[in-house]
Length: 227
Ligand code: SF4
Image 1 (cartoon, helix red, strand yellow):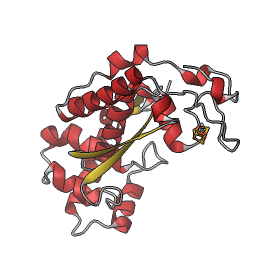
Image 2 (cartoon, helix red, strand yellow):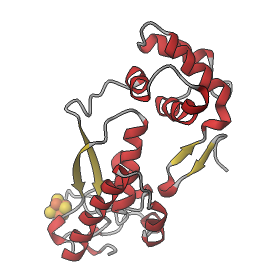
Image 3 (cartoon, helix red, strand yellow):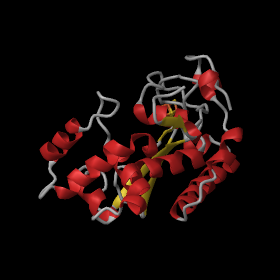
Image 4 (cartoon, helix red, strand yellow):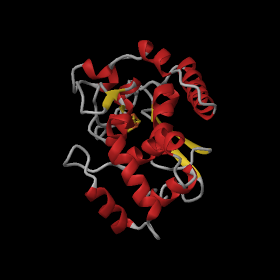
């Protein structure tokens, strides 16, 4: 059982249920709307007055989720895009309006014999499982659809634009993967981007096919790793 108000979504991403925090979220949104200017200090003050579960702070993503959930019923003064802009983090990663979405190919060996290169059979060759990007990929079982869709959702939740995407494919040695895998991987990334843009969510169809590499033993020789 997860934290109050959360449940696990496909790919292991926690989904937030605004209904569990209706009073606090509506109060926070109304206070933010009443502020002449929303800077970091003002926002922190509002969040301190309405702690989540009496101790924690609501994240920006949760505020945005609350705004979307209650907007029709509560009739907020702001438009969604104005509210998101008010509370969004500085768009450092998407200053140009292009949001980078990084995905990893599945664990796979490499014919190289570079002695410095990590060997972790749970990761594509040369990656370590404790790197944040690698962990995100592992949580999505390296499935290209899940990785892409969930990353886009995460960016949208914190107010980043998702209309223009720079897709960055990382992994071991791309040219050593079978061609069918290469083509299929890219196709699924595009399907996820198209689906996300059209409001279609087919993540539940992806999960049954996604292998859980985390169940493999940790460090073995990645040159002979799993396929
Ligand atoms: S991925 Fe392969 S080629 Fe690249 S550093 Fe590692 S062993 Fe060498």
